[in-house]
Length: 115
Image (tube, rainbow, N blue to C red; front, side):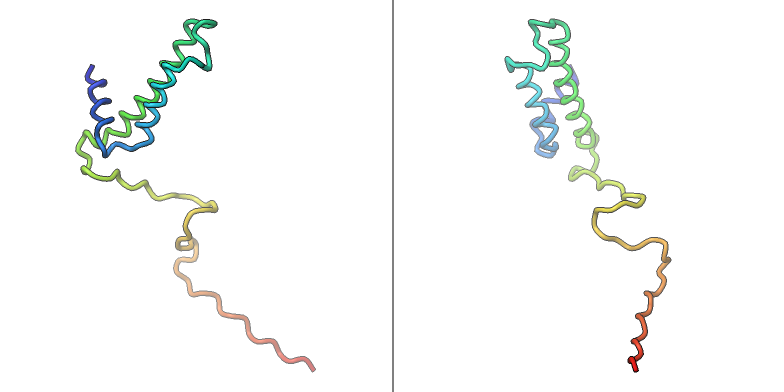
């Protein structure tokens, strides 16, 4: 019962991320939608389990995303993600690694004129 209260509180709180709130709304819509991935009439137990699984996953996501809000974790935006590690393309260009702040390579000397 306490978790249900927390879910309702998180749904009303404007600081809760929108994507988990939307996921829970879509899972609830899937619960009452007549078309299912696994129909209840053909496979009774599994048909209800897939509905409840979607609702459970969405509610769990909502509770985890709102954990920092309820624990007083700053009262604002969530903390920034940790810095990326390792190589790989993509992302914003940053300082180069491995050079240790070495001076840039000198330009090539001009070519000598041909005779």
